[in-house]
Image 1 (cartoon, rainbow, N blue to C red):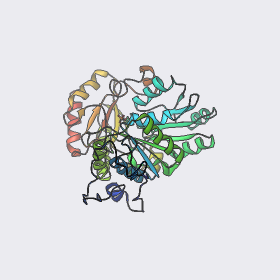
Image 2 (image 1 turned 90 degrees about the vertical axis):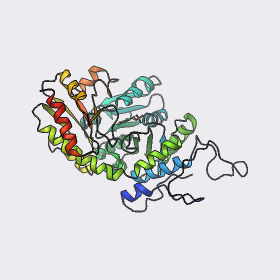
Image 3 (image 1 turned 180 degrees about the vertical axis):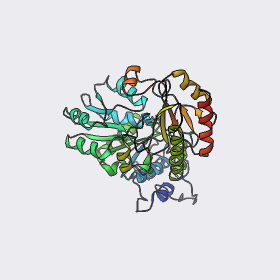
Image 4 (image 1 turned 180 degrees about the horizontal axis):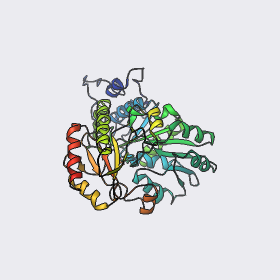
Length: 392
Ligand SMILES: *Cc1c(COP(=O)(O)O)cnc(C)c1O
């Protein structure tokens, strides 16, 4: 069955966020997509069915979510998974031993772990490259390359990679391009419009938006990849449950409204931190002196809700005081929910990256990452002000 974004009819993002992939339930008129809690589907005769035969392969609640996300990313298809790493895993599993992946050097820690601890063992080759450095990319692409994999904005340093330039160079070299678009969401950035082949999401984050579900997705219009990924879902089975799909569909209905507020609040918080005497650097692509600002302004419609900062003096104990001194910001891994979170990459989200690689990538021990929520900005600033005052 098709999961293509059937509401991709020229209507605006907000309209598609609410309606794409969904229609009132034909049997009752229920406006919300039902949670189809079923493992199998009755067939009229062998292989005569309504497009569904077994729920590992497809489920109508999941199909609605896939249609919705495909429409938002502007792709023909989307394949949903039980987690973000499940989605990355399915992409990597479609490669062959000996295939080479050029991966960005500032990635979600779990992506590194999957690449280095699982897929290298099966003969996939990973070269970690700073993709903000076009010369480094060019030289990496001199060896045969199957896929270029990266995040922009990256995690946790909010570095910006030029989607169009990387896609052009990769394609010239015969490679394809996959982007983890979790931080930006399709509201702020649609990588396929810049030539990217595969767009991956941890839907756990902004797409779900309420910190109550774990999920992943890959959006693409490349029919070979669509077939490969559908084969992976059917064969390896990393499926999301129907209730999870329902929660994600509920999340996307407000994605555009939430993202606007996340972006507004992040700017206020970034400006506050930039002016604070104890703060060394603020990593926020919305600042004109951020090295990726111009590229971000070109490929994103706003600068997102994530930012990181370091403290002067680089004393880890100071960072720990800030991390345990906030009360509106909760100390937790993850990001993208309505509530603000504070995180210490070196000991939490990026602890699986070896320390020497972490420091090489510029991830200091006092680096603090914020997922700025949609509470009142004044309360967020007051909370950080109080936590920083404890450092003194
Ligand atoms: C969280 C995250 C992932 C992994 O997704 P899960 O849903 O936790 O499996 C991948 N990439 C990025 C950028 C993330 O933030």
